[in-house]
Length: 399
Image (cartoon, rainbow, N blue to C red):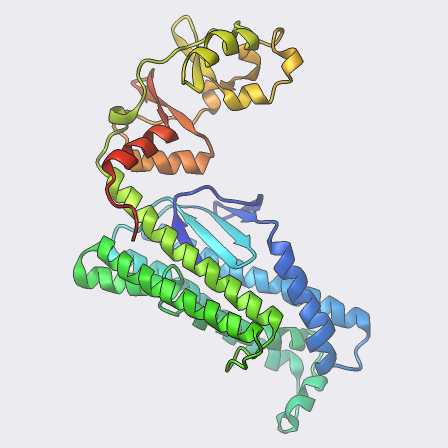
């Protein structure tokens, strides 16, 4: 349903498609259960009162599963088109509100943004039309003049396809709403970017429109919870609460997307060499964890220590590694036993852009990265040092 630059993919990984890691957030189970329940206990029994319970619930489960497969295909279209336009994609995450494609960075041109943004809604629309076409094939001869009674003539496969078709078309239309960071908001940003030549200004306009749309959803949701009949959405506590939650999520997403761009712009052109820590305390792999704590950790504000032996970097040991070691084992445990080996460390160069460094820190889920120059450790870049620089030199960080 949307995409965002940088950041670490949340949820647990379930596989890879076309080299793109697929993650599923545990929150997905909530909406999966709700869709299954709504179809199995409310909608399909009305369409097919004579169906056995096993057929009803099996069809409901299949519908919920294929709905999220449809969202995955939607996000894959973003990722593949983005890759074709030179925008690397880390991963795709499916969660309670749909899906998110994790981009390495913002698109470099407004045309790349436009093509990547429209790919998702086009894919969902094509899926919806295809499902309805297949439903007609599998349904066989059905007397459409009977209205709702015609639904009872559908078999499980055609029922499934009849439900999936409109849902994907609605998904396409919803994503075309010009509210950032929905696909429609990204299309709007691309157009504004192309017209003004100013990505920052275009993002600000698209973000504010996205926030306006989000607050509209929140107000409609509250009205529905209070019993107001809202056209198309209806009324009721649960539907209203769900609509308000979607609005809350979109508002936060719009705000954070703009702030991420502000941070990237503030850090653009600032080399890591300017922010990194050069005078580092190092440790020997044979040092005990207890000695590391007493003689290094407690006597400095350094939280990560390069492990050096005979002038060579063997790894990095940090506070997180110490916390994972039982306290009673500190005297007998060596630093070399708990460190992260050098070959597993993510590292960056001295001329790396600080914005790229922050993205790398977020993607790797770490608080510091070794800075390597010609194969030699020259410093350590920490998240807190980047944030400190932003607080001093970043200027106004609010939209």
